[in-house]
Picture (tube, one colour):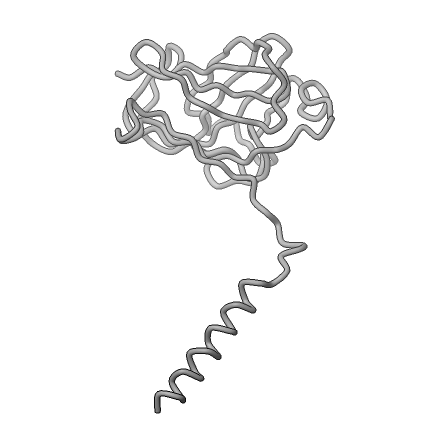
Length: 178
C-alpha cells in the first residue's frame, strides 16, 4: 500500500513540475503596478493606483506617441484606476471617496488631470467627458530620463503629491486630506 501511495505521489509531483515548466512564449506579460499613498509603512492607504507601465523604447513620447491635447489613458492597456479611501481635495476641487479612472490630457507646459466615473474601460477609446468627476490643470516639468512610465506618491502639506513621470516629463497632482 505504501508503494502505491508513493507512486501516486511521485506521479502527481512530476505532473506539477511539467505544468510549471511550460513555455510561456506568446502569453501577454503584464507590466501592471500598484502604488499607495499612506501616512506610514503600516498605515492604511489613503489612495491606491493600479496602472500599466509602458516602456519608452527610444520613442519620442509626449507630442508624438502620446499626442498633446488628446485624452490619454495615463499608462497602457486598461485605463488607470485610482481608489480614494476618504473625501479629499484634488487641487482646489472636492472629490468623494470612491473608485475612478484616471485620464490626462498632456500639453507641453500644462496637463489636464481627469478623474472619471467611467470604470473598467480599455484605453481612452470610449472616454466620455460627461462622466468626469473632476478636472484640474497642473504644470508639466522635466527631470531625469525614466524608461518605464511611473507613478509615485510623496508627502506634501496635509496630503500627497501624485507624481507621473515618463521620459523627461514630470507632472505632480496635489491631493489634500480633509
